[in-house]
Amino acid sequence: MKRLFHVSDVHFGAEDPEAIAWFSDLVATEKPDAVIMTGDLTMRATKSEFAAGGAWLRSLGVPVTLEVGNHDIPYYWDPFRRLFSPYQRYAAVEKMIEQPLDLPGITVVPLKTTARAQWRWNWSKGRVSPGSLSRALTLIEQAPRGNLIFVAAHHPLIEGGTKGTAKTRHGDAALTALAAAGAHAVLTGHVHDPFDVPIDRNGWTIRMIGAGTLSKRVRHSPPAFNEIRVDGSRFETLSRTLDTQPKQPISEDSRPAAV
Image (cartoon, rainbow, N blue to C red):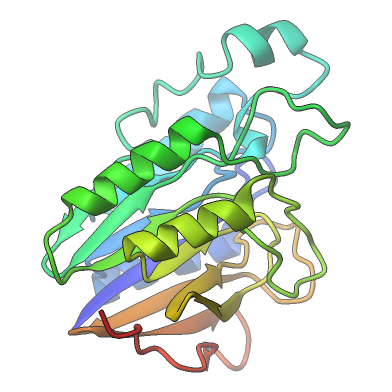
């Protein structure tokens, strides 16, 4: 059995030290096959926050892939840096950003959902560009036949029933395209509460899986991350929470649709 730890929205600068230490201890003792970090590593995209977040991710000692969240690019009040040099402070983590992962039987594909600017007031919401979707579809096509395909993004492509919203532009069409390409799940963050929702697209079931947060910015659930257990062609999602019930299955049916 393979195990992936799916973590999101750590928000260094507003992180929860107890939750960070708890997660690190679990990685050290349980040794998952990889950690998938789906964005908002930082709170304000400062150099010191990226340095702290990068040091933490490297200390885990397992393969890591990192998505860029809306908090990981400069805020609106620094428009020049946001528009023209938004990635200048990524040096501490650049080798992890949007890195595909290939494990036996599993391929993790990055999908960028953040944007420097949008034609709407709230730039924190998601957007899937044609280029980002095309890159993800190409990586899916190149994956070994029979692999489970997990797509890693920051924003949920459609709403997952949480209080927080993503309102991802072109997300619904992207979900349909990813399902048609054979993706089995899209792993996301942003909303700070865990969920696992099966979506049927033309006879293919693709799962929308969201992780909680390890920051102090909790919403309906305590600090949490997801453990994804893979057994052959089947997988299940457990929400691991820092409370009296540390493991809660949140997937209803972990079987992928037949090819």
